[in-house]
Every structure is written in C-alpha cells, then in structure tokens.
Length: 329
Image (cartoon, rainbow, N blue to C red; front, side, top):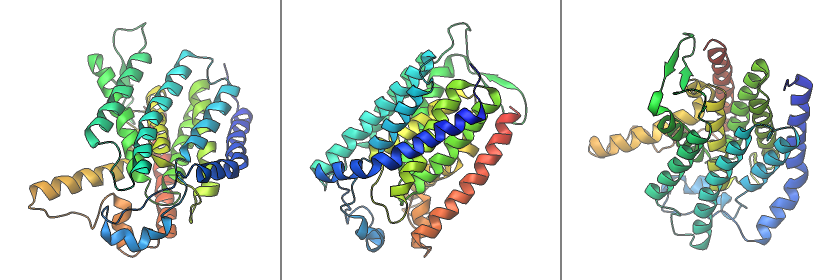
C-alpha cells in the first residue's frame, strides 16, 4: 500500500498531539500512584549536587509514549502486515522487562531493580523471538545491505542471533542514554524520524507508519520531558522504545547503518563498555570522569540543557549521514 508525505504528516501530528493532550492527565496519574523517581547517593556521588532536584519526579512516562504510538500506528494501518504484530509484541515484551525493573526500584528505593544478567538475558530472548517472527519463510537465509557499497551480506543461521543482539543492544543503549532531561526522547525522535524518511522513500507502509508514530510520540513527550523535566521515561519507556528502534532498523534493512542513525546511543553504550574494560584491565584507571558519555561532559562543567541540545545536534547530523548510507546500501 503506498504511503504519501501528507499521510506521514498526519500520523506525526496525531502522535504529537496525542501525547501533549494526554500528558497532564498521565502525569497526575503517575503522581497519584506515587511512581516517583528515586535519586540515590551511592549511584554516583559526584553527580548528586546536579541531580538532587530530580528526586521525586514522576517516572514510567514511557507508558504514555508507547501507548500513544501503538494507538496511532493501529489507526493508520500499522497492523495490516503480520510484522506489525511482531513490532508491538517486541515493544510490549521489552516494556514489561522495563516495567518490572522500574517497579522493583520504586518498591525498594535503595535497590538496583533487576540484576544485569537477568535483565540482559530477558531482552536478548525477546530480540531472538522477534528474529524468528520476522524471518522471511520464502528464503533459506537472510541478508543485510552494506552502506555505500551496494553489496549484501548473507547472515544465514546468524540471522536470529544478529536480530537478538541488535534489538537488545538498542534497548540497553537507549536505557543508558536516558540520564538527562530530554536527551533520550529527543535523540529517539531524530532516529525514528530518519527511519520514517527511509520508509517514505521506499514506500514501505509498515516502517513509515511505526517510525513516524514513534517519532511523534517522542516529540510530544518532550513537551513535558524537556529541561526541567516534569516526567521521566523510566525503564519501561527506554527499553520499549529502544527495542522498537532496533526492530525497525532490521525491518528497514538498515542494521549496519545503526551506528549512524542511532549514533548517540551507540556512543553512550560504547563509553560504558570502555569504562568497565579500562577499570578492570588497567588497574582501576578510568577513561572518562564517569560513564555514560553524557555524564562525563556534565562533570566537565557543561550545563545539562546546553549539553542535551548539543547531543541533539550531533544526533541530527548522524541521522542525515545514516540516510545517505541507507540510500546507497
């Protein structure tokens, strides 16, 4: 089914307005349920003076973003293909993992939520199931396009593990990025927007509808999440939206372009891995003041609101580069 620019604009506006209109009621509901973000001194003592004001801010606002995006996508043909159900299943599966993590933190503010291993294995399992669900039964193996080269790489039996790693990796990378007001939501809006353009250029209804719906929902959420934030995504939002980004990257045949379209998230995740590796293998020496990367710059003296805008600018430039990569893959 062809999809026009006019239709994409209507989808975008519907998602933005849906979040903006429903936002105040959702925030009041989160406050009424006492779902407020705890800020713990032991997480990172140097950041406490900068983050103490965030204590008690309503969290789990990702439920609003995901809910609006799913409703809008459903209204504009997001379930006309069976892969639409794979997308929403992945979003809900990863969202549940995040919801459990958030709930454990709220019940015991001094706890860390889900442990790292069960959390990663759960997201990896969801990603693997998505890999099976979106594998094309008409071909014996799956392949991915190589940006700028025009060649394709046959993954064969590595298809499902690759999709699992991409989906889980995106989910956790977005989760790591969600540490400043508006940072994750703004960068997600840019990444989903880029994928929406890819869908329009290829006349891919599924990719366009879901990408634009999610981009609009993230933009609408920014109305309340921009500095100083009135509500946070929570792990339910960051894991669900990150997983959705990974799934759509796969469906848009843009797996290898992820390092550009989702470049901010990749950089944040890599900074954490390098920090851990350096601490363990270089006699507890750190590469960064603190990880993820945005906190490194924050401790360097850059105000939060200015740092977030700079990350958005870099994310926009990377998204544009990613579009050129996908166009030549």
